[in-house]
Length: 132
Ligand code: AMP
Image (cartoon, rainbow, N blue to C red):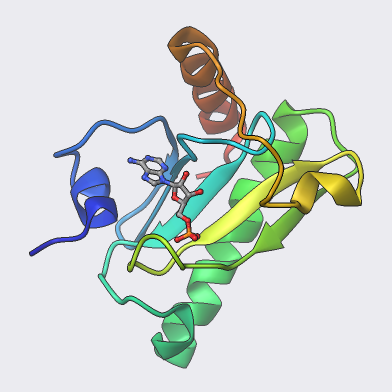
């Protein structure tokens, strides 16, 4: 059975799309730690990120870097942090988190609940800044 993230990348489950190409897909985390918290996935379904082929892992990171630049242009922040957990969803993904301080990277922080219109506006702005 396809993972929830495969269904998102295929457009079968809605998401706030931030960037996409033939191989990778980026969308807002539905339970963001901070505004602009984004997930980047390969369309190919592999559970553990470090089981990806070397080339695919490298391309995923290059794509994530392009998404991170678009996030930084969209959300005022010091830097965009990167984290890999994968404890909840068994489909490799990178978290991109616009940081004001180290505390913004704490996954134990309470999650934000942003209105759908605000999530859509953030995703649209990141997509507009993404250099495709
Ligand atoms: P982890 O697998 O531990 O890296 O966590 C999975 C992340 O995916 C969590 O931050 C969730 O909030 C996020 N997530 C789960 N389902 C969705 C969804 N349908 N759309 C966007 N983000 C999701």
